[in-house]
Length: 101
Image 1 (cartoon, one colour):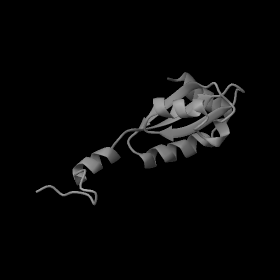
Image 2 (tube, one colour; image 1 turned 30 degrees about the vertical axis):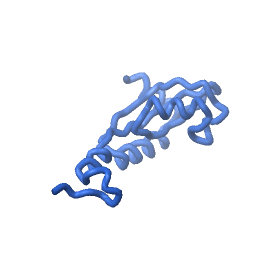
Image 3 (tube, one colour; image 1 turned 90 degrees about the vertical axis):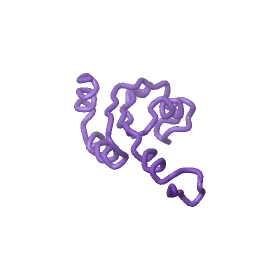
């Protein structure tokens, strides 16, 4: 018999698999030439959210956007740690990252 979560809709192994989704750190170039760094497990949806004004407060009025950098991470914790590292970088260092892809 399979182990089920409280709702009974997914097995515990299915829930674990959902948590194993790849996460990404990304940098977008805003129309005002500023850079925004974030994390997501769905790049296309997140960019769409930013474009619609449903993304971060910072990006609400700064579209359109150009995705200039993505980095795949194994989980959310690693992605958050990498995001923190990137946010501490200078603009020049972030642009160098994007040019290395």
